[in-house]
Image 1 (tube, rainbow, N blue to C red):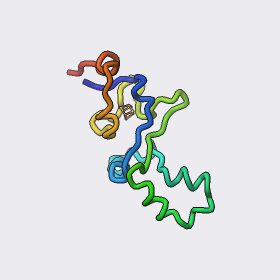
Image 2: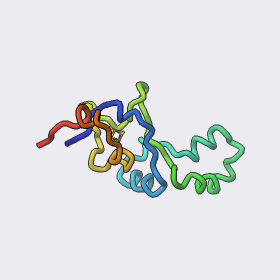
Image 3: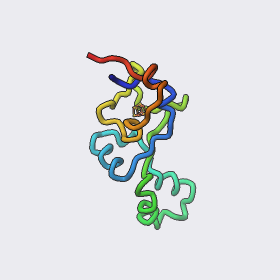
Image 4: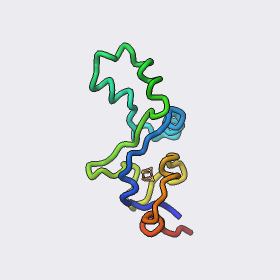
Length: 108
Ligand code: SF4
């Protein structure tokens, strides 16, 4: 089964620092944004305390980016999750009966 483009992929997908590091190592770094970067963008006076801020966001370290329609940027042109095997824990644990009907299609 593979995920397809659905309402589920509009949820806010948050990654821990450990998961973020794994994501970057897999080459998906450009698809996530770090909470520290967002915070410092809004509060540039904290730039010198970046490491401290980074530690504060350890458990909710980064989030997946969304496109203009609010869908996850990792949905491929075929409307399937383009990183299905490597998808974040939040995506793996997200379950609704709607997913069973809409989000999953049989694979070979
Ligand atoms: S990583 Fe895949 S399953 Fe998770 S929100 Fe993005 S497209 Fe959906």
